[in-house]
Amino acid sequence: MAALDRKFPPSRNVRGRVGVAFSSGFFGFFAHAGFLAALREMDIVPVAFAGASSGAIVAAMAATEMADEDIRDLLFNVQKADFWDPDPFPKFLKSALRLFRGYTGYLKGDGFARLLKKLPVKRFEECRCPLAISAVDVTHRKEEIFTKGDLVDAIQASGSVPMLFKPAKIDGALYLDGGISGKAPVEALADLCDLDSILVHFIASENIKNPGNDFLKKRFSPWRMQHVAINTARMEDYERQKRIVAMGGVEVVEINTGAPSMGPNSLDNGPLAYEAARTSALKVLKKIFLDGPRVV
Image 1 (cartoon, rainbow, N blue to C red):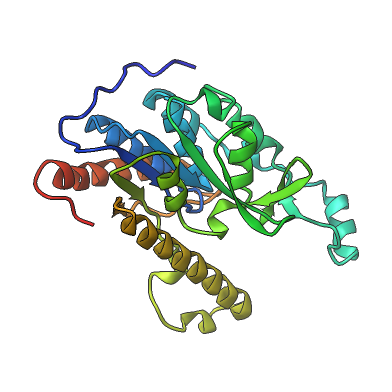
Image 2: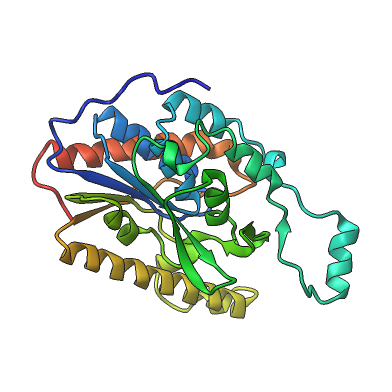
């Protein structure tokens, strides 16, 4: 894997120290990578990164100085078979007959871990700049912010979507998706180092964009209602984090590039999501950093 082809010089357009947080968002790493490419095109050099779930993957790519070419090569060539590794059907059936007692998730996560090992470094301590990755420690019932140690373990923990992936196991504790506890670890990013502003590349959860009771018109209404409640709770926590950070004097700028939603069965649309986010981000970043005062 090639090293970053150039060191980005400090931007003359950005005042102060900037951190970047990438939010959770189902298979949102294509859009996050497009946003990162736009930052680099603008010569905006963040001093720290943070991410949750799919955002943790791209935050790590940024903090390890992974080149755009290598990021595109990795993401654009991902196939479902690379990470789709469910238990054999007899084992799944046996779990079903036991009413899924002890069953923790559909995919084993081994394929996901193999993909993550293509990152240029293996530990937080090897990153160019500070990095924070959030996950939920379901063993000890608390949010965990990883800032040191094994990088692949932390990203896998943050990306272990409940029910889809089995929890990641670290030192005997089970970890699930970092997006459960909050959309983006903004407060953790502010705690990493002194910052003047934080850019959040935000991917909105589909089922909370439009208020109302439309979930009652769909099948599995109780499950959909619970899903809306969980997304509402993590959004409330995210908003709380933004208020705390702002009270500490750090400006928070949220950017939603509106890239199309992605899933395991639509990976072929990844390049389109990447380019849509990159193009949209360039327009927004130019307005923020070149055309006038920043907009919160």
